Image 1 (spheres, rainbow, N blue to C red):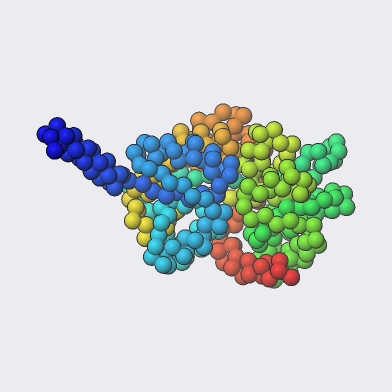
Image 2 (cartoon, rainbow, N blue to C red):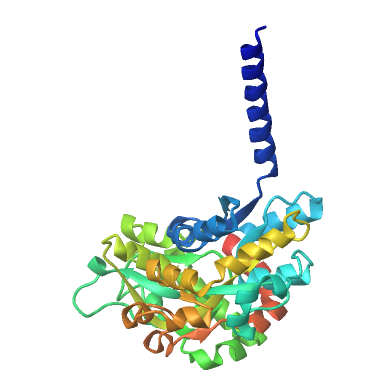
Length: 350
């Protein structure tokens, strides 16, 4: 082989070696969220900028039921997810079962701008949302539209199928409000045997008209397709459909206000990097941009302070939208949620 060819071969081999080594050393994490318009906005405003800033490769997955997958991964010792978006109830269960890494807040300085009530040793809240009543505007005439959970249950006045999330959480609260319980008394009533019985009895009244949903993207899809005339839904999902020109509307009366959090599954090999990612993703500018793309409220106080009046008015935390809202009771569902969910599963299967 000539000297020139030998040199060319050596350089090519060196380039391949360096490329392979660089790829092997490249840092990456896997982020898991809930898909649809929710994750699309999240990716654009928060995830991709955070990954770029940290110089890492971001892999994304989505699952509307991430909790059992986290549990399987942790218990098997084969953890492939690094940061996961979870609702309050799943955070409570996961912390109790030891499924999450303890957070080092020194690696998450932006968490200092998030109120203490919206974070703890194992999770950081990043958005607020409401589960609300949503309906097709063309299904009803004039001003006679559904506004309350009593209207949602009134299938004579407002005929048609209803969409509801398949689970006890939120639905039992809605049932009691439909039955005349003031929002401030819902958990006091639901916490008694007679109150739980009352909620399930009210659910049974509506059961023949219910079409169940399990993923947040489904309620607006059901509405647009005409499968249901009204549904429970996450407010941001309806906002996203409205921005696409869909004739959907929200009633905020009796909506249930809750949070989504970021957690790190226990046993991830990328623990410190995952915390740095959460820190970058918790920046006020990123959270504010997210609120502009989809109407979920940021938890970072500086983010809220940077939003204009029009954007703030669409958020579940705005005074007009929150005045008749019910705050999701974390303590109640931690104490009684397992029994109520088991009862609901048996009831739904009947």
